[in-house]
Image 1 (cartoon, rainbow, N blue to C red):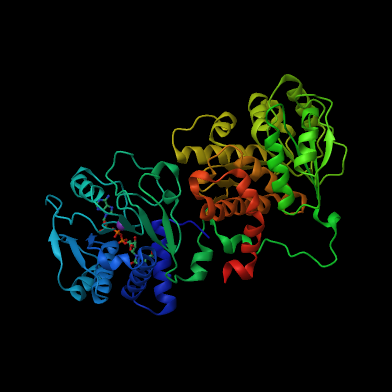
Image 2: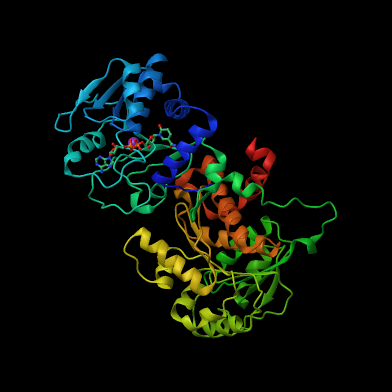
Length: 505
Ligand SMILES: NC(=O)C1=CN([C@@H]2O[C@H](COP(=O)(O)OP(=O)(O)OC[C@H]3O[C@@H](n4cnc5c(N)ncnc54)[C@H](O)[C@@H]3O)[C@@H](O)[C@H]2O)[C@H](O)CC1
Ligand SMILES: [K+]
């Protein structure tokens, strides 16, 4: 799914209206009906009990609010619509004013009266906002943010631009939930605005698919439909050799658990064979916890030294729990220099830290190596950024310069390809913020690489599945208690869910 901005959507609106032979008002009505349906599904029966207040602006976002107010009113909800006084309403806003009937007018200087609790629907500004809101908006936005019940925003939290940096002090609605139309907008996905976007749902309002396909942009949002088609069916005549031999290299004293988790995640993700290269201390641990894995025991006792690379492996996952002792750094550097240019590799954790401290090694990275840093590792690798936009640009520059696929891990993990394309993930939750989650991801992606998925597909599919395991684990254990080992346990269900018939039904 593409991520688009306000200007692109305006154009696609026009094309939709022309090609579908509908009026702009009809499109607005479709959007309003979708928003009502989504709120009814989220709030359930409880919505009937709540006083609902809708705050409308002068443009089409306000027009949506007026239509939502009318639809809710017709369905018997307890709804009150407040409309900002203006000299220049949009045409569809005016039509919906006439269709609504009763509404209360207010100005920015008014002391807006709101019910003590209930549901507030924010329709002041949507994707048509062209610059951050000035001081005159502080009063009204403060009132909305001080509301005693949930605040939901239609399309965008009012005050937040779709895809440009905005001063953190600028007035902006803090939405518990955003119902955004057709496609996500970049600012809904960035950590910088996490305080204003409690969550969001994308509502399909049937915009012209050809126009959506043709819209240009580097940003994408990976949803089930995007990755389900990537999953390869298994032939009846397949055997363990069909699904590749993955090699995980890592572990050190006190950190063997990382390799255990990675290895189990790899096997659960379908590779045919798995070898783990571990220091001697890891031998009994791996053999007893992951009997399916073969072992190649390093000459190093407590940490890796030798990095023996003798097998015929289709993919390597390196760095998990590895440490960066002197002999490990030496062995890793030698291993990197001996790599074949077409090798498929994912580097994580200490492998990335070593690269940050030994930038001369970057030139040995085979094309399309996948790097999976967490925020601190990313900063060591690409340097300090001043905001999310700069972070993305620096990540793109790094990916291009070294011909790699770079992940920015976190909520909506972003996958940056060397051509500058950027894929944000839709699955996952804060329950994943526990040491070990990354080891599981490395295992999944390494396994997919070994099975012959091209690196960008392996990264997109791996990140999506990893997040999906967490969404499934959340239902059973909740965000507080779920563990990385639970993610591994939910891999079978996640892969099953992603199979087109079950997930997309
Ligand atoms: N395809 C869709 O997604 C559809 C979206 N719809 C809704 O329409 C809005 C966008 O409507 P638009 O009229 O273009 O913009 P807004 O309502 O967000 O506000 C425009 C209004 O505000 C003025 N303005 C802009 N910036 C500022 C500012 N910094 N300070 C003060 N005033 C500002 C501007 O001049 C306009 O007058 C979209 O979000 C959806 O909610 C359709 O209903 C259906 C199709
Ligand atoms: K809004």
